[in-house]
Image 1: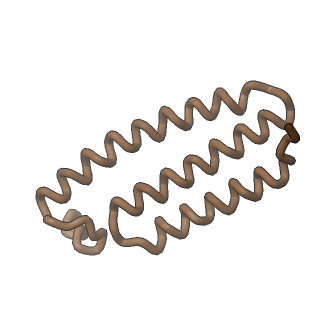
Image 2 (image 1 turned 90 degrees about the vertical axis):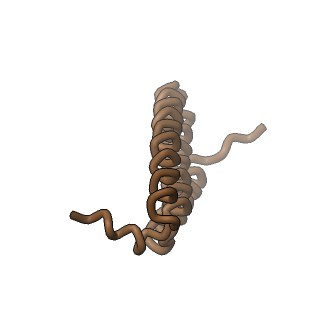
Amino acid sequence: MAALPLEQALVLAALLFALGLAGVLVRRNVLYMLMSIEIMLNATALAFVAAGARWAQPDGQVMFVFVLALAAAEVAVGLALLLLLYRRFGTLDADALSELRG
């Protein structure tokens, strides 16, 4: 089985990160924004694993586990906030939720 070159893995990670960033900036639905953040976190995890595999070090896989833990925490807190926002305002549109500003 041939290994994936580091440059190709990093280009894929950069494309995924750019896709996630575009999703955060363009979408107004908070749920889609959270999914775009998940794509960005997965892109960074891919970059860590690719770099770790390139230098034959387990550091990339260790960082991948940390990124997964961070993503799980983000999902738990984010979905709880989404449920509360939807119950209070009846929408998940970020522009409509601007009432939260003090």
